[in-house]
Image (cartoon, rainbow, N blue to C red; front, side, top):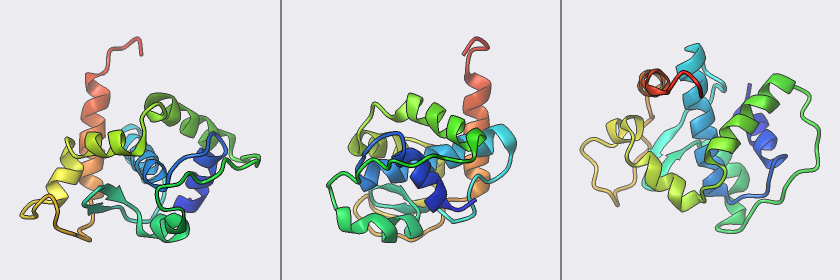
Length: 147
């Protein structure tokens, strides 16, 4: 899968800012990695100042700036992916881009990729997939069985 397909699935749920879309794609990749051990999409995520960013996704939606990308009126053909994105949105969709940024700044995958960098210092350091896999697998293990 491509990250832009995932982004469309999120945008079929709701309008949102590019920052929020970036973080939702990060969380989708992370949870998918933690559950399956595999990548949901192939593109890399980088540890930018404002949290995880996929450069391909950034380039596609950067013209929106701080404004919302409109909700897409499309049908997602991959029903499994559609259900997965709905679950990620159910967990994180009530947070805005800034709140999601703050959340990612407390998590090991982003922190590890930023070692040696000041909080304001730009970076294109790739967030290691293995770090995401380990972090989200551990989060999964910490969850109560009835969730």
